[in-house]
Image (tube, rainbow, N blue to C red; front, side, top):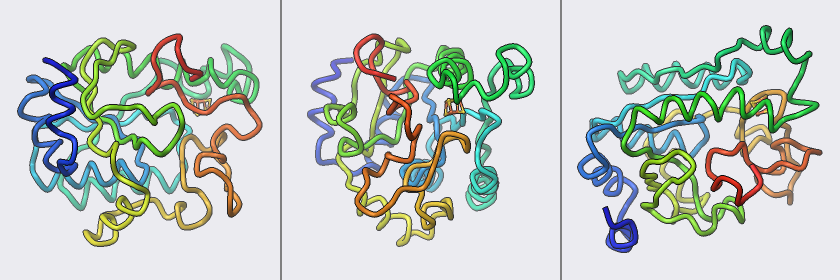
Length: 231
Ligand code: SF4
């Protein structure tokens, strides 16, 4: 696959069209890893309503908000789909026994490595391509994301159908199509991850300011090139 040619050809196409292209050309095994953010809910809606053969899964760290677990079930019920749970080797309790309690406070990079990156790497080894819900204007690290690009970190093709969309386009789609979303978004949490590492933001703050607040960390490491950007 020529990634540059594919990306150029898909620029300006709708996320629904890009996802249909991914299902047709991404290889026999295409997966979508969702964290149940607003963007992820859009992608789930587009995959489910088009009945695309894309395997949807989530990294269940065991530390998600109750509202996120509830959203997971509401999405499955609305669309009649299964969103598979991919779990780390150790439960939260087992990790606490092995490494001490609340590893996320002392070493969030190590915690994310164990609870997200290692399970994701094992899961993605089963796929030819994976879909993400990142947008270019979310962070400086995501600003150069292409629609189709090689994912050197996980050694497969990465397809980003929402890269060109804005925050308002995402929310316009959610409201217009009655897509379930996390109620915490309307309570000061624009970006939601694990409960211990997510806080409310105040007006004027960056939309991801509530993630790992106080730590030198902006990403969990899923969407940055190995050794290039801070995870
Ligand atoms: S977001 Fe926080 S709790 Fe979740 S895996 Fe990363 S460091 Fe651990």
